[in-house]
Length: 92
Image (cartoon, rainbow, N blue to C red; front, top):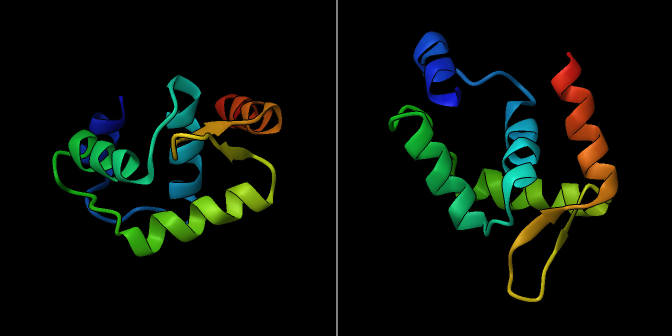
């Protein structure tokens, strides 16, 4: 699904995509920041390589907004608010 989308749009990632990519990914399972980056590269067949300088500040903002929380093992997971936000995005 995501890899097909990347093939259509190429290397230009729309503003705000990273935020919703993370929320969508965390719906499936807890992930570390590194795992999120690796998954993005894998799913885009190397077209999109988000840097730690993009992902970690974004994770910080999502934490501040109460959309995700960090687990004891250093992974991130959706909160109820984050799950509702991700579900709202699915409707668009």
